[in-house]
Structure formats: structure tokens, C-alpha cells
Length: 449
Image (cartoon, rainbow, N blue to C red; front, side, top):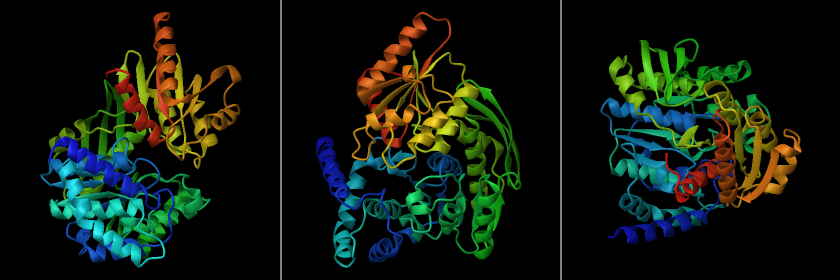
């Protein structure tokens, strides 16, 4: 089959999936995904799993865990969401997106089962449930030695929660998806803690005291074994380095010093500590220091404080909630020395735009308000009204077309850099959709890293 035929079939599959119940709307039940996986022969139970939930940092932590497990010699399947540019990114096998041939074959394998379950349920299988089942099947068919599974939304009722994980991982919890998860951190934490399995290992990132109490109560309820950041593992030390940072970690079975991590931000150091603890909890032994260093030196995290161009500096970040916006703002302020930061921001309508802009106002000097092509995008005019609470009128420009907004930002920063000895930069952020679109726009404009 030619590449053109493959691409055509992938587009048809994506269109069929997009007609299903959208992934940003959930129903608190595992009935559909349980019925589907049962009909498929429970492929998700044919390999061990590490299951990850939390508010931010899940995808990067998953990529780090994947890299460490691969260094140990495992064939790793990784399921993450949402995607930046192609839906095939969500299902990764041996560190690369699933091949078109395997993606097509996997969909064809489950298509009749989707119709079967649809016919017996009040609501049909959702987009996310279908892709989750496809990941389970693809990993079983390959086969993988272990799967790293990221929860999509929440935990307890998330479609991924049919797995029987040996290790459950909880990244930092903040406010997001409150319409489904609850309006308090306690409620959100309770829902996410639903991924903890009886007598399993639970690895917890540092949390607020109220969240920690909820998580530890659930750990005790299911008789799990907890490993907590700041107690059983920690970031001992970090310092800036060219292209990232140098970190020293307290792992579960000993310290590992002088690890080069090619990612920016103290939150990424925390993700690294969490990932290492998770793999050691799974393996039950100390990992070789040199293996750990080599694995972390190869970690990438597309769309997360990703420098896609350097003259002028263009940074893309998928921050889509206040917690994520605070992390990128803190990173920009502490690890870069820019004279001016021009922000291009486009968010989704259901998100806390005010909270995102409040955090970005601490690092962005000039704001270009825009919108993505997503049907869920907030109108740029609406976002601009919210922005007036955090930026002065002379700091705000409204350019609804994202390509136009990015082009204008590049021109503005280039001109500024030409007349100043200091360095200014472009930051493009607001959602995963925005980050993915920005990567494509930058490529189309002929801008290279």
C-alpha cells in the first residue's frame, strides 16, 4: 500500500472517530469501555501497565518513564493525549508514533466491535474510548513488554482506568475540568485518586496539604504502597545548563547525581524525579546511574517550553490552565533573560482564560490575542476583553488568524532585536491545539530551529 493510500485511509479513520462523542465531554461510567475491552478479549490485561494521572506534566512524565524503560531493554507502548499535530502521536511503540499500517489494521480490527457496543448502549463509544481501545489492541498485537498509560480526563471514570496497573503515578494536581471533576482541589483529587489499584505501588508528586491528605487516604483504603516526593524521593539539586539543566535526584534506592536534562523549568526536574521513582517502583531495584543519565539526556517533550527557533527565539508551550501557565511563566522569568516577551495566546472556550492570562501577565510584555481553528476555540474578541483585566490597552493586539498573529509577533521581535543589544522572544501558548498548530505554522513559514 502506498503512502498516499495510507494517508487517505488515516484521514477517513480520523473523520469517523471525530464523529463520535467528543473527548472533552465525559459521562461518569466505565460501562462502555469495559464492554468494549471485554468483547476484544481484554488486551489491556496482557501486559503490565504504569498508569499516570494528575493535572499537568502527565505527558512529559510518560515520555520520561518510556525512555527509562526502553533503556532497561523493555519494548514500551505509550498512550498519551491530546495530540499536537497527528492523532497517531497518541499511540507510541518503541518511542515512535504508531505506523500508518498498524494504525489502519488496528482500527479495522475493532471497527465491528465499536458498532456492536454502540448498539447496546444508551450513548455510543466516544472518540477517547475508541482510541484507548485501539491503543490497548495495538500494544497487545505488537506486542509490548509494558504499557505507559496516561489518563485523559480525571481518573476514576476515565476510559484508561480499566487497566490493572502495577504502578499508579500522580503528577501535581491543580484546577482544571472543574465542570466534571469538582470545584475544590479535594474533589478533584478524590476523582483522580480513583486510578489507585489494590496492593499496587503509588508514586506521588509533591502536592498541597489538602490534596496529599485525600491521596494518602485513598492509598490506605486500597492497601497500596506509597512513594512520596520529598520523602521517599526528591530533587536534590538543579542548576541551569546550556539547553536545559543539570539535576541530582534522590531516587528510591539511592541518589543519582549530575543528570543532564535537556528541558527547562523546575517542574521538569520534578517530572524527572517522579519518572525515575515510578520506574524503580516497577522494577523494584536501583537503576544503574549511567543508564539513568543516558536515558534522561535523550528525553524530548514537544510543545512544552519547546524552542522551535532561535533568531528570534520562539518558544511554544501547551499550557492550557493556570497551573500550566504559572509553570511556563516561572520558567521564562527564572531561566531566560529576555528584554521583551511577545505572547501569542489562543485558548479554548471552556478553559479558565482569566487564570491563564493572570499568570502570563507576569512574563509577557506585549500580548497578541488570537484563536485556533478548533470548534472549541474562544473568540479572540472575547479573550481580548478578558485580557484588559491583566494588560494595559497599549500592550494588547488582536489578530484572530493564528498564522497572522505569529507572523506579526516574529516581525515585531525581529525588529526589536535589530535595534537592541538585548534579546527578545516570542511565546506561543494557551492550549495543546494552539501549540500543535503553531508548530505547523512555524514550519510552513520556513522558520527552522
